[in-house]
Amino acid sequence: MTQPDTRANTAPEPVAATMADGRELYYFYDSGTAPSATPIPDRRDLPDRPPSSELRYDPLLGEWIAFAAHRQTRTHLPPADQCPLCPSTAANPSEIPADDYHVTVFENRFPSFGPEQHAQVLGAGLGSVDPAHGRCEVVVFGADHAASLSGMGGERVRTVVEAWTHRTRALLALDGVEQVFPFENRGAEIGVTLHHPHGQIYAYPYVPARVQAQLRQVREHRERTGGNLFADVLAFELEEGARVVHRGEHWTLFVPFAARMPVEVHLMPHRHVGDLTELNDAERDELASVYHRLLRGIEALYETPTPYISAWYQAPRGRRAGGYDDGRGEYRLHLQLTSPRRAEHKLKYLAGSEAAMGAFVGDVMPEASAQALREAIVRADA
Image: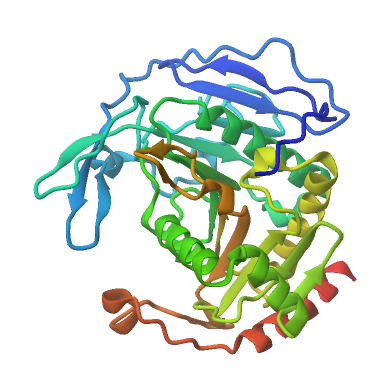
């Protein structure tokens, strides 16, 4: 496995603070900006944090389901003057006790996993129940309530990359965390509950089913061909060319050959790395640039904003149990950005075949989707 780059980063170190109920909060600053040395204290009177949620095992699919009943009371689409992600004011003492900020990361007040993190052996039988240990964090991209990450400058996107990297490293070091998943839900059609530009990071106490399925494919591909599946997929897309949206020095953006969603684009590094912490500065710089262009292109597809889910797939923590290699060394970091928008005024809904059987039927040919994205990025760059 490629060793992580250890060179000093040009971005300032984040400033850590503690929220009124004991949650951790981090302020990240754009490069060249002097960080505030003394964070403003959070003086709210908050209730105690909820206990960890409950994990139940589904024996038919071999998956764990988290039950977090306390999330029923979480904030839901508040008016702008009551947004919990805006800078705090006397009238709106928000989650972020600051007059202004660049990027902040804090523990979610209504977590699906955590707030405790402990190593545990999860049950895998009928009626198995375990604590949903882990951690959920909120990543706020900026102080402007009406902004979007696509509309922010490339420097801000670079700061977000630094925040993802910092938190991935910190979360993988916690006892009981097996997988770290940074993501962004954008748009009411996706189900967001806060309009303020933000994403999240989930630190799971297990390896989720989608990554387990990928790891099985990776192992089977190695046994069958002797090659790495991610490297071979990238080589296949580059050779075909029709679905490549952008090829850079370190990253390639492409619509996959068997894309499930009307808008689906993958971003993959040319060098084999397992997670964001293993990228060097040049790779992170290009990542920020390409990702910013991708988001601007997604926004330029139609006259109105396109809803999407932007999901970072990273290698699991990596352990050997009884001599079994979980495949971390074979797993390559990559982004999958998807949208259910199949036309300007039409959404794809998962019903019947897709929702019940997981048997997808594509609405848009991948080659046509790639061409539309290429054209949208050109319009956004103009």
